[in-house]
Image (tube, rainbow, N blue to C red; front, side, top):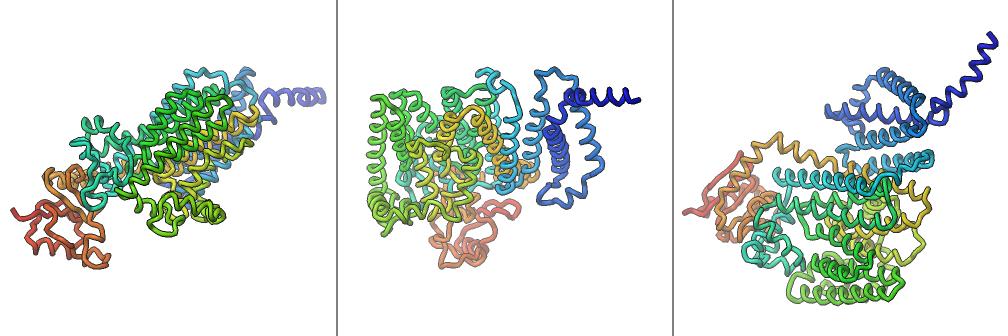
Length: 621
C-alpha cells in the first residue's frame, strides 16, 4: 500500500503539470467564469432582462446550481483537452480567457449607453489583457500575414460602417433626425444638385448659401452621387463610409511603422471602434465627417514624406470647414520638427499657407457671412466684445494665458476627456518627444477650450470630435512604436479591448432604432406618405423639427422656431403664428392648437393628415 501511495505522490505532480496545473489554474478558471457568465447574460438579454438595470430580475432568473455545474464541467473539459493537446497548441486557455472576457464584457454593456459601466469593464479587460500578454509565450503576434491582417481589418471596418449606416438610416426613418442639422443639408444638396448654389432657407430663416455660414466647399465632391441618389439615406451612408474609411490610411501607417500580424489587427481596432469616430455619426449629417478620411491620408502622406500628395491633402482638408486649416497647421509643424532633412520645410510651408487661408476665409465669413455669430458661439469665452475676431482672441490668449489654461479641463469636460482617452489607454501622453504634443492642440482648443463655453464640443456624440481624435490616434500609434516589445504588446491588446468595449457601451443601443421602426413601421410610413403629398414646388413650414428633414427636398422649407410665433410663450397649445400668409403649406404636429385654429380662421384648410400626429394645412385654392 505504501508503494501505491508513493507512486501516486510521484506521478501526481507530473499529471498536474501535464494538465497545466497549477500554472494555468487562474487563467482556466477565469476563462470558464467569463464564458458561462457571458452566456447567462446573453440568454437573459434575449428576453430583455439586463444584468445592471434589472439586476434583481436577472439574478432571480438565474439557476445558480446549474451555473456551477456548467462551470465545473467546462473546467474539466478544458483540463482534459489541455492534457491531450500538443505542447505548441497549449495557449488555448489564454485565448479562451481573452475571448471569454471580451464576450462577457460586450454582453454586459450591450445597449447600456453607460460610459461609466463601460469604462469599468474596459479597465478590467485592459488589466487582464496585460496579464495575459505576460503569461503567453507565443509568436502569434507576428505569424499572421499582412494580407490576412488586412482582410480581417477591412472586413471588421465594413461591418462597422454597415452598422452605422443601417442604424442611422432607420433613425431617420423613425423621425429621429431634425431640422438642425439633417434638414439643412438635405435642402442644401437639393439646391446644389439643381444649380450648385447651396442655398437653404431653413438654416437662417431666409434664402442664404450655406457657404456664408461654413466654408465647406468639399461638399461639391458629393454632388454627383446625390444627383443620382437624392435623400437622407445617401448622406447618412456616405457619412458612415467617410468616417470609417480612414482605417485604410491608418492601417498603412501602422504597417509602415512595423506593426504586423495580430498586433496590426489589434492596433487597427483602436480606430475602427473609436467612439470619437462612431458616435458622432449618430447625430444627423455634417461636413466634419470628411475629416477622418482626409486627415488620415494627410498624415499618411506626411509620414511617407510624399510632398506633392501632402499638399493636395492639405488643400482638401482646408475645404472641409473654416476651422479645418488648424489641423494642417499642427500637422505641418509636427512634420517640421519630426523630419530631419530639408523636406521639413515643406511642413512649415503647408502650415503657413493654411494659416493664411485660415485668416482670410474667417475674415471673409465675418464680413460677408455668418462668421461673427459662429465665432461668438464657439469662442465667446475668449472674446471681450461679441464682434471680436480671431485676432482679438489670439491677443487675449497671449495677454492672459492663465485664463486660457483654466478653460482646458473643467468639471463638465472631464467625462468627455476620459471617453476619448481611456479607450486609447492614454497613449497620446506616453512620450518623451515634446513636439508630438503639437498634434494634441486641436483637441485642446476645439474641444476642451471651446467646450468650456459651447457644451456640444465636449460631447462624444457630436461632430466636433471627428477630426481631433484622428490626430490623437496617430499620436498613440507613434508612441506605441517607441515602446519595448513586451510593453507594446500589453498596451496594444489593452487599448484594443478597451476601444471595443467602450464603443459597444456607448453605441450598441443604436440598434434599437431598427427594432422600434420595425415594430411601428405602419405608423411611420403613414406619416411619411402624408408628408409626401405636399407638392415639390410649394413652400412648406413645420412647427416640428423632426418633420423638416422629410420635407426638405424643395426650394423653400422652414422650421417654425419660437421666433416665428407671437410673444415669448413656449406653450405649444397657446402660441400664435406671425406672418401667417408667408407659406403655402403648414405641417403641424397637432399640439399647436391655437396656431391651427389661427390657420383655419385665415382660410387654410386641412390638406392631409395622418393618425393625429401630423396635420397639413394648405391655402384655399
